[in-house]
Length: 136
Figure 1 (cartoon, rainbow, N blue to C red):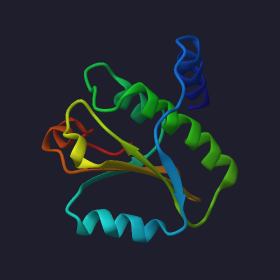
Figure 2: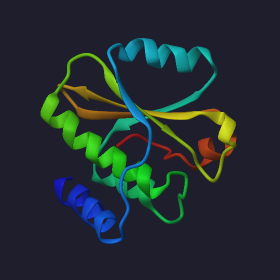
Figure 3: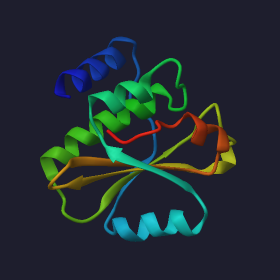
Figure 4: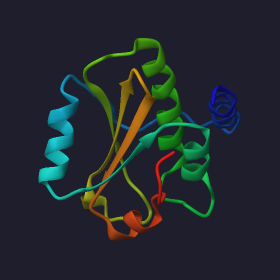
């Protein structure tokens, strides 16, 4: 996983990209997740690993822009170092496959048994169709 994350980060630096997604740390992960569920968002969750990152970054997928992938990679490394037992990072993201009003969100959290967990929330039926079919 480290090799893929480093490769992605190096690629972004070589082409002059930098993380420009809005993100924040929220103390209560359960409140954030419950909020999205109550508002009718579709939720996808999985352990974050090389296979999932490659799938999200694939050209066929196209649901997440490169700056969001970079933000996920950077925050993933930060989470591995911090290992917060409560709270999560929340990334707001847009996709070419959804309306800007959809307010898609990604949460990243630490789980002592599984490592970094990613949750993707969307109201877009197009994005929902392009999300991976299984967890990794």
